[in-house]
Image (cartoon, rainbow, N blue to C red; front, side, top):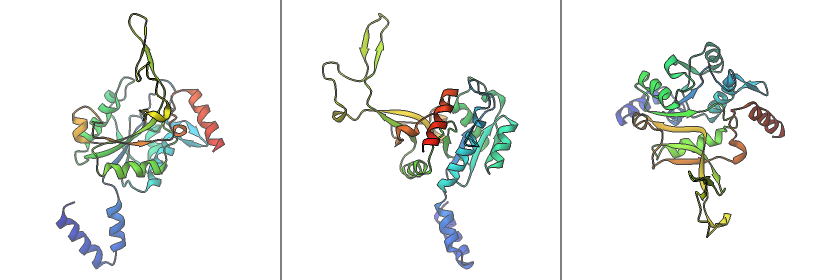
Length: 245
């Protein structure tokens, strides 16, 4: 929105005595929320519709994004009628994804690229993963705030684990530390591990076949909130954690 348009909008709202409504409108984030939820999940059938405490993973994500109060448009990209119905039930918009980008080997990047090509007016977006069941509104608010000043933001956890790998000749090699100078936890900043919970990005980066660059910011997620549903054991663990909390 340019300055002239904003001024005209202010005059219009003022004439109706609705300046507070204008303020609320301006607080809305121009970023569009996107949830990728195809029907053909390979590991767990209809994984996105699995219920925890009577609420599907898809519905939980939509409701949490709504609770942040920062998105006017929440999209669900899907190829499946059941998922479409669930999305509409909870107030999301639906984009019918092509079968080409709803396969087991389809990447999130290509699915988002297809969505953006069909919605040319959208430049900035926030991609949410509904298998990240402990997404919270305050994480979203922090990401939105950082996205105002940075081209991309994504969710991470901090790790202080010392990692090794076995080389081609069967030897062991330390990956992230010097074996002659083993770091104490308090002596290093550790590593940042992606959680996959969300990626705030823009069309320009997607056109470069990526969501992130070196100028990204991160939101550090508590380790207990970083669980991602990928197996039936993950579902059982999530249920236990929800009961505990």
